[in-house]
Image 1: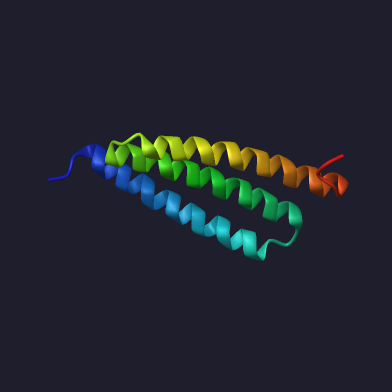
Image 2: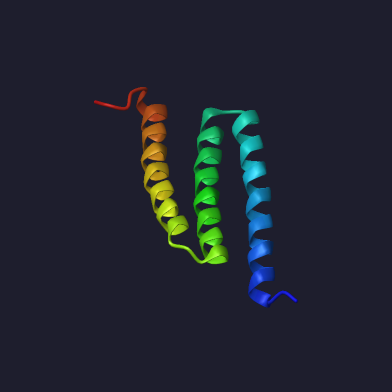
Length: 92
């Protein structure tokens, strides 16, 4: 019999996968570039949370380190995309 924590982790994984599918659809369909950047931002955030939940599920530190790397790369890429959309160039 599953414990309450295992059920909650399974439910969280399912919800994050559904959110990632919706973000991927918005990333491909999005009517404007701003919508696509926002979808990409939400997608990497969901990926980071997915890594954290998997780390809780399997009880290993590797997933938490992956989540930190995803957070750092995702933040920098979001800032670069926003700057590109505002000014048309990344490096000044």
